[in-house]
Image (cartoon, rainbow, N blue to C red):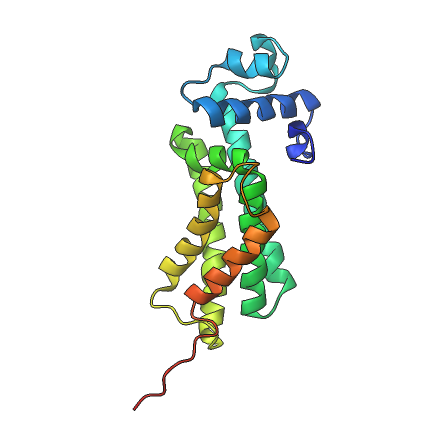
Length: 208
């Protein structure tokens, strides 16, 4: 990544909290949430275990901060893209490009954000679930607008929206700094796959 890990959350203050979140991402991604201790996180951030509790009441609170931030960013990404493009095809192409590239560039964060949901407390899980539902609903609305415009053909809009998001999310599972192609190129390739999946550009047979 081009920027230091602690700069992944520019909105978080103070800097020590960002360093703890960055250290937690690395620990959660490599060890898993349950195998990571607060001492592991604090030590990786260059602090004492007691210092972590100044900024977060528990290890679970660090995970929630990471997960909520990731889901808020992807939701905002979808909202911004849909606001920028009136044409469903253009909006879907750009959305998938951005969504996939984000999960490739931030593959470590994305693994924690997407695959440690079960470790959240019930209350925190509900907050994140609402963000995920909001994102899925927007993508579903975009697919529906394409169907209504006659540029997409899908048997089930809900399944199509989930498939689109799942394709992007899965990138974080296998992508690494040595993976090919580059995140932006991968995003463009996935965008073409998604448009094909949605039936865009497929010649429809005339009824006999």
